[in-house]
Amino acid sequence: WTAAARERQDQQRKQVWQVPTPTVDGEETTAFQTVAGAADMASLVSHWGPAGVSFINADVSVATARMPIGPGIGILAGDRSASEGISFGSATLFDQVGRFGHAMVTALPALQTVQVD
Image (cartoon, rainbow, N blue to C red; front, side):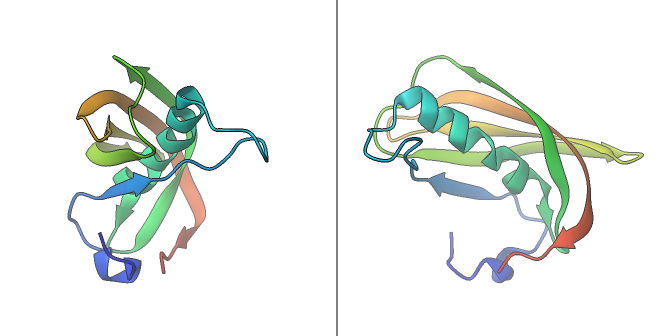
């Protein structure tokens, strides 16, 4: 991964490491909250291409075999398909131990393609 995100606007499969963000100030984030927050990134990694992000997620589904271990979650783009303005994308969820889940998003065209900086 690189901090210069514009350099990654290509056809390569994307992945990110998501650090949990507190849901409530002063409260420790639970593993479930971490998974739910990170699953939203499945749309970004699966819909990010040469022109930026041209679809935004309308729905996300998550399946896990276990809760994540450690402070972060990796999201690795899997598959993506689009037809007539509807798209889906999928991503594997992993932690410091290995793969533990899967996220699938359905998406609609963004009103304007989002350039990632």
